[in-house]
Length: 511
Ligand SMILES: CC(=O)SCCNC(=O)CCNC(=O)[C@H](O)C(C)(C)COP(=O)(O)OP(=O)(O)OC[C@H]1O[C@@H](n2cnc3c(N)ncnc32)[C@H](O)[C@@H]1OP(=O)(O)O
Ligand SMILES: CC(C)C(=O)C(=O)O
Image (cartoon, rainbow, N blue to C red; front, side, top):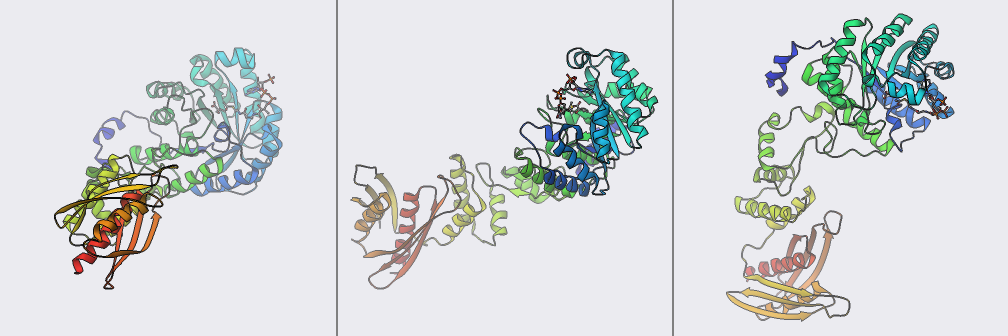
């Protein structure tokens, strides 16, 4: 993998306390479902849990059973599926919440209580000791019921260190299996996270986990810093869903662990794009195209220099192969396209062109790009076919055109043509601007040859009012000569005029 070329990572790796393995604790179905506006049905939660299990996450936080009967039902159903992952239920340090989770037959309980001064004073209205006592109760209660217990000091990163350590040591003594350090409002920076996890690690025996929020876009960076300091579990969600700005994105954390740190995880990375799309569809939360790893553009290239590099060797502009995460490379055509991109697209469509035709096609793509238009594969194909079928000689050439149309005016077209080196102009009316333009051309060309329009077809290649239109015409002369003409433009009058002139030139070259 090309990332091995990044020697700078190797140079700092020995300063890290990387764990041998990192466990992936997925909370898409709990914190992810707290994404404003997202509410999943029992069946939806089950289908996501099944996909998460196939993906290989170690723990699925299936929900908060005390939240509602539907939530409890979902967690119970997921727990009954005998998935490989541990199924976890969230619970406050309250007997009712713990019982709700235990009723679901989960094998893992994540219990939490706020510890920071602001949570103690304004939310819980409890003093430090009261919180410690409730935490001990919850851990012992869950432990006594034979489940694995994870304890979170909510808002840990805004909690005084001495108190934080005290509550963590206390729950460790009470039998917690793992301690989670939530950056509940995403206020940490990577160096500070590393510092905090180091200090906790020096004083605690049980494994440490982190849960980072993305309020400042640092959730993934902070999670990785915690791992650099020895945390061996990370809370993540598919697509980074979660409360407010969300949590650390599973796909980003996992790929960084594998690629940058070389740490094994149990994730089948080829499934990442599929599960991302699945979750996006079910939750209705669309991903931006530029989202790392799973975004539509994560492996798309438009710039000519990049396309050239990628086609020679993908690693020039792709840090990993798209297939590794179940993605596909896409070459996109537009303003920044180079000829090599066009050539490779034509090869895909089995279209061959000479250099002159290729140059014309390149100029057409650039012209559309300068107008702010994206050129789809279908657009390029139609434009190429048009060019390939062009008359060999331009006996009749368009020198200028103006059309006027509207509700209370007669559609009129004024056309200026060069016919065998003579400039001629005519203005004609019609039922619409296209008809008027074709009438004007006909009146000018009829002095040279009597050519009639037999067939006219128009089609939009891609959707939208600025889609490319493809016009196809059949024209014939009195002698029975027939020719087809084709043009692809975003302006239907211009496409029609070009197609008609193309067919006329073909008939004239036959003479
Ligand atoms: C950082 C996080 O993401 S934590 C998870 C957040 N997720 C959710 O809140 C989603 C599910 N929540 C719910 O459905 C509801 O809030 C419920 C059912 C849990 C509770 O509903 P209600 O009983 O009506 O309480 P409400 O939500 O209004 O207030 C929260 C109560 O929990 C208390 N509380 C909050 N955290 C804890 C905790 N960890 N341990 C004990 N009590 C807590 C608050 O002090 C408050 O108590 P009060 O009712 O005595 O004032
Ligand atoms: C329950 C805890 C871990 C949480 O979601 C948070 O602190 O953000």
